[in-house]
Length: 299
Length: 278
Image (cartoon, rainbow over the protein chains, first blue to last red):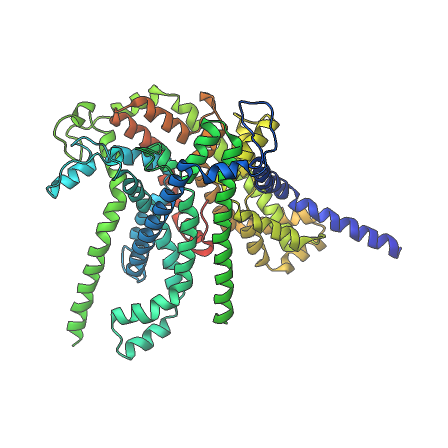
């Protein structure tokens, strides 16, 4: 009797696994297995055109170290990331500070400022490509003409191409950091603010000595999430410039895409993917460590 | 005294509006330019230009819609997004309930594994997933666009957190009345979890609808293209016929914008709470 009950309990325990089985099998097959598979692929010479795949050790990584295109792609990605993360965080913070009060129309501003975030990057890029049209009738050229400047070739100009792509990404991601900052600001207790007001602190002093220090965990979170996001930018490059002119907008994931799906060099694509994975995992790890510390000190 | 204070606060309100109107206009500018161009006659782009059309025409929409199989692209996007959302809801609710309420061996380790997949970016899995889908024979089918996104750590996590806030007494009462555990999830827990369902569905739908690189890589025949991929191919073929491109971009964007206006509160609050997109 007792024995039967424990067995039944145990069976019921194993049956509980059925609840998580569907999710686990999908995530296992399409999230976890691919990482292991990519690590393995990066140690081979896998190529879609050739039927035979050989183990070649660290050959792909050796090639990567001496590949000028990879260096350019890494450099462009870092420049792109720093610029996009800095400006979207800065603008997002400024907008959040402005929106962190109650007045008529605040919800409408928030909704409209967030609109670019829910728009598909590839579709937005189709519109921006037309805004950047190199003839004098392009929207951007008409705007600079208002300031008495000459028409630019924007995406075709080696010096302007990357900043032009970055401008679109800043436009698209500012709303995201704004929303996170707004949530962070609303968590700051109003009693601290009232106390500072009573003590005669002006608007700037309150921002500088109360808001920003209390917001620093949120600022850090936004920076890390944006770095992870920006490092993977690809759709806007694919639509706007195709990596050109003169590889000036070649970024890591676009290079990965070219190698794997245009040159069919799966092994090299996997090696780039693994490098990307290590960089992004390091970012996530740092974020967790710092968050842990913050919570610890905060309590 | 009080009058001066009142004036100052009116002045400040005005300043806040002024400071907000410029960035709001900038964030709307591409949408307005897209719409304005899409209603222009093609010849108008060649001459000296005004922002809004001198003569409004709907011709571009008709021409763009007929120039490529956009109806098919639309149907594909709807099928893929709807099935992805349905699958995410089923796997997410089941796993979320399992982790919140059901006894099983190794529960914490399994939950840790699920959370770990949050760290895996889709750009990293692109190449190996292509080869895996190739081996399964799923390339260029709906399955390749739906199944790999049929479970997300985000939806599992969200459901688990939400289910934990539902009082156990309710569930126990149902069990005593002879309801099975799965029945409790379906009849008691899920109806009480509408906000979680709505959030997961919104994220799932927008993520699937907006995805570009994945369907670009995983499909190659015209009849399997989603709207985003179809739009990209169309704009390449259309060359410099920007009135057509903008009309096509407009009918790609507008449905998602309308949907966003209906669910924007949940969507924005969901992001603010979890810090996650896609």
